[in-house]
Image 1: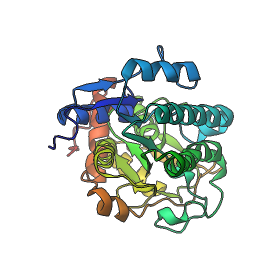
Image 2 (image 1 turned 30 degrees about the vertical axis):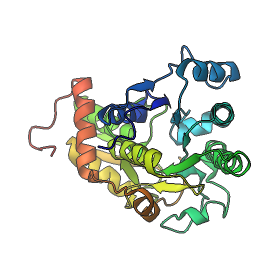
Image 3 (image 1 turned 180 degrees about the vertical axis):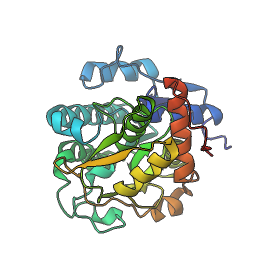
Length: 323
């Protein structure tokens, strides 16, 4: 523990959400005495007046901007306009008013969806502008990517200390398990556990299973955010990930094993695969502020499954131990 956070006033947008809850808990562990968490019912941060109000009410020295409108492939396909507009307007306005408040630091959480569709693996930050994002999530990815442009422009013109992180897909306890908007891991966990409980013989999964993904446990992501907010002060974007790649096919096999589902997996190849591959080069985060993911993927999945079971009253498999 350092003394850095012990007198700071910090505004955490999205602080009541999935990732934000872990970030706020870590700030409390670090001794941060003044954390402001805006609730959407009080502050619709898409609206400029609400952005001005949240600054007046919180008087922050540091802003950690985590609030976002997000979802899986299906949600992105249904809501490209609102995913683009809401994410763009929240970030642009929060940064502009933050500049006027002479903040000590503004941290923007970007997205791996900002990378081009065909980025060489592992993704390196220098390749961020070498092509157009994968089509199903391009409006969301480009909206978040513009916040990097704004952060760098504000640093150049105003000396504004804005930093930008590029996280891979997150997962963990507290994730969104809504079948209409969830990402792949919570969607698969829910499908397998519900099929098992209802004694269904099969589960349908989107796509071919060939694409690869990288996943970061939410507590590790929160650690990276706190470290970068304290120690990183440069304009270059930073990848945040676990540094591994797994195919959707192998991901499904692992979740089937950990949930104890014994049925058949049906691959619906009429549904889109999304980006062909995703895996980050995470060396810059280690070099710049000493971040390395600590939770193994199987351990993180086990914790996530156990959390969901505890809230859905689904008994864990008797013959398998989630360790």
